[in-house]
Image (cartoon, rainbow, N blue to C red):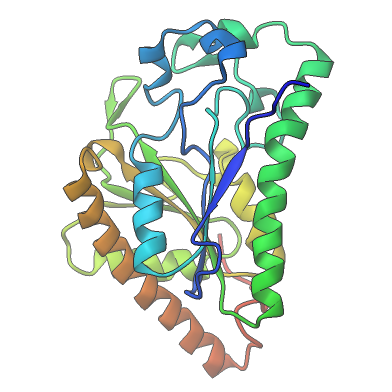
Length: 268
């Protein structure tokens, strides 16, 4: 029987820190049987295949904040783990102007097989981590780590970092305040993407729908070009996350909310 490559890795699984980190676009790997999906190896290593620097940043944050991280081990071109698997773009036929030959004219059986192989185990792993942490009474905020390109469709993106949120803006508002306080960074509020673009699936499913503090972070990938750059952003985001979670916890305590899992009436 053919071995099935794992869909995810759990890093620092027993971490006792305040976060559950998620990185859906951590890898450009495509198993040999898919023949690179008809692309060159170089194309797979572009942003269409993964989020450059995101996994390195997520792992550094997991170490710094002693928090577990669930990250993908296969390319998002096989199936985007941050999309509803029923969405048309969950298995893209084209990305950033590049055709993906190996995804053209897929059978329903192949789509279902990729969902069973990739989507279901990945999200089950996140749910397992959440259940374990809730059973232990651990403070948990769910944060997804991504990166974005400096230029898209000829537009130079001015933001160094973006904070994405939906109805529950508790953590996002606190993070934007922390990151913007120094005046050093151009911080995007639901930029360069927003939930309306279909990019908030994981955080909605595992964070917002459970009333947990949650946000999605996007760092421009030219700022994650080497280990030193990754560490600088790790230090910046670790400080901001620590202060933002503390701020949210203090607000909840003052309002009589029953912990991080309390439902929010946050604004959009």
